[in-house]
Image 1 (cartoon, rainbow, N blue to C red):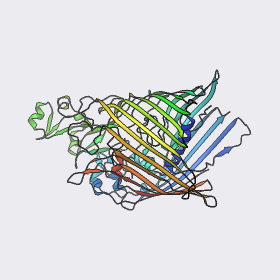
Image 2 (cartoon, rainbow, N blue to C red; image 1 turned 90 degrees about the vertical axis):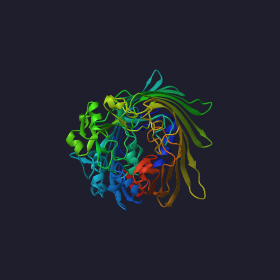
Image 3 (tube, one colour; image 1 turned 180 degrees about the horizontal axis):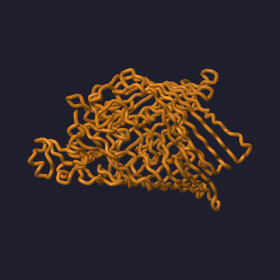
Image 4 (cartoon, one colour; image 1 turned 60 degrees about the vertical axis):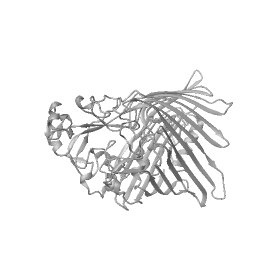
Length: 603
């Protein structure tokens, strides 16, 4: 029987082995955990308490890109950490407690605390382009949300769940309830195109800014209940129901890896032009509960493989954006009055007083913007996994109905004006609805993972090679907002019908280079090979990242890593030197390369 005893669960013995391998490679970390086990003198009790301390010191290794500095919605993180700055000086503590009774019942609680001294002294002195707002005006410093999650000291609860494994008429049943991670499918490295999309709000911010972060920190738990039924030795069924929603976590406004100062939880304003901005309004979020899914796994002995079928109904974990201006420029006073609105100047029409008062407009705050998150996404998927000649091969494909597509910011306008602006709406969406484009998309992921035996160059090596493909099939909502079909949209990220990308990880290892010391050289490479994906952060041609370095595992207890981490991508820049579009997130980070030193130990 498969036991629910860990923080991150995945179905299938092959999947679990491959996931552990991929996480070790991707994070560049191997070695033995040293838990504190309590001797209770009761053989039915297993009580463990693990604590991990990690220290990161990061140094900026690339000069600031002037085009990014010239772009007021993309420059805060870049300006906060000048050339040659220390970009992270961070201590993390991860504490985990497990209580297991008769190996079938128990609970788990884990938490994470942190402090990053690098955020105590920021280099930005360019207040005129700051998206941080204090008393309605641009200000230097960090939003409260960024202050908490990137500076600290602060902390959060990770896992908090109970589990029970039992037999019903000879059938094994595993149940679990609380805050935890459970993700399906076979994708190892890319969660955006996986059929598991939306199951866990991945912490991309920590992935980019805290090298060495463990999987239990990156896959943030959601409150849910789930059950697995092992109907026969080769056939199992599983279901899950979510009781709480959570969004993906990207680098927040003002943090070193911040690519966009306006979006996500820390965003407080967005510049419309050099002197006017819209302020953040309450987001439109999906319903807190109701996401669910079912799956089936069949492992026929005849082909020694695992086949999976899946259906999930999920909310989006990534936002679309909506802009609600209070004024319309370039509208003659007579035309403004004819439409039933007030004219503030001969060419400035006051169209929506609820979005900004007249004093606010005169101060440069000319409206509101908000994030909207869709629900009701249907995901139909299938997967296949098999060991072939010592290589762990897997593939999955999924079809998504009502999937949000990359969209221009939709404008919320009064009815007399909405019909005159491409993609605009006149009624604000309700919970679970979104004003942007939605449609049907295809996604596929293939993985090859394995271990290379001893060669003249190294003692052993682990590798993962992953390819992803996506295709938008049709647009079912607001095609005028979809960047792929919106009239006049010509950004370099304009979606193509198909997208193909790859991600590689390779870690050679040399054992006992000194007594008790293993040496590793982890390296990764991610690149968009062709096209631009139609889904948010799905990938773009020429956009990617890379890392390489050395690591030392000392007595299987102390881990040291030194890495160089870099980003590549394309930017479109106008004659004023301002970024007008970017080929994905990494393109806006192409001047954020850095060197990171990490130390970690568990006790």
